[in-house]
Image (tube, rainbow, N blue to C red; front, side):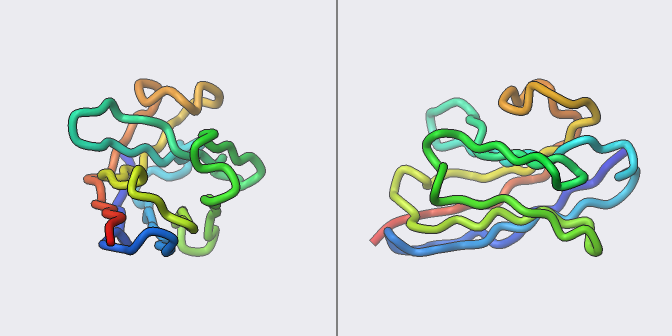
Length: 124
């Protein structure tokens, strides 16, 4: 089992920044990648970004490219999502998830473990 704990959400004005963190513990040796997803009220959960556990691969949704950066702190087994130039449409509960297999990073159904989520609200 892998446990994931998100932190760093909050309320920010449009154009502002936040950094989300996802701390992993447990059987982390079995992890291949960590992804971030988000879900707004009344909408389906959508892919945001993913990073391989080695840190050598990153991929992003088109809607966040150039604004968000995913990275990994190897010493702390923590994945960060730096979010810049936030927009009201970024408002959602953001979840981190871990998967044991490679590939299909965009599909939430391929992830094996999920955190509890952290709320991000972008509003003036």
